[in-house]
Length: 296
Image (cartoon, rainbow, N blue to C red; front, side, top):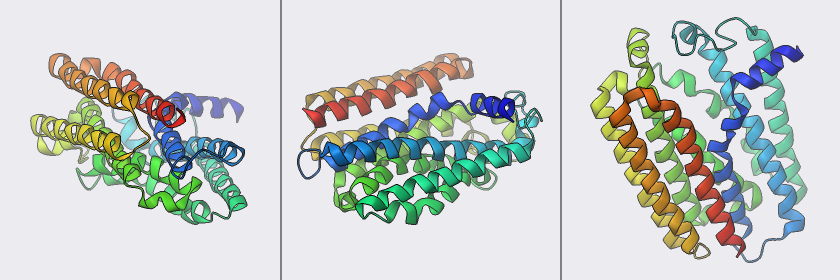
């Protein structure tokens, strides 16, 4: 069992939690600082709980993906070595680990009742079901990329609700969430370029397979333009953000342009750089800049 667990943890790449984690943490900071100075005696614990929830929720989402897509993955040269698809880890074991993470996620949300906040635990099951459904969407609609974007876009909003539900009326939180949605959907379209042939064969509805590569890339570019516009909206409507966050937005705009130029020049051969390195930098830069501005 320990060996299977180690293989699963390696397969779902815990390090890739970096994509959504900074946005969740930033959303939490925005909520905590919304009415004045941060009360660290409370927020410190809430922040630890948010990080734990993100860890467990991502594990549930990734394991659901590995389980539901195991037959599809087994027929794709790029994914056939995944431990569930290859049979290296039995589906039952992966299901047990998924269930454990789901229980831990729900249990962690219950701690927010300590501050009279019942929203996290009340919404916990709905959130897990939403996150787990993504693999099914690509069987039916090319809007699956937007669905994945919406899944990660929940992170700043969910964190804000966990810290202070009243911040749902705070416009910058929603603008940030919209930016995350467009950013993730845009790079997921790029990531899908690797599997166009297999997606067509298996009748999966990714945008590149359904609409063609060029139209899909135009949509990806449009989504990333909207992402930058929304981030400028965050910078101008969140009064506690200053020049550092604004500089981060300009840097991210440059990184996204470079991302698309890389794909245009190298095709799918540089996807690893585009998908993991650049997008990890985008998330870290924006989250760090926002938190520093809020703390100044």
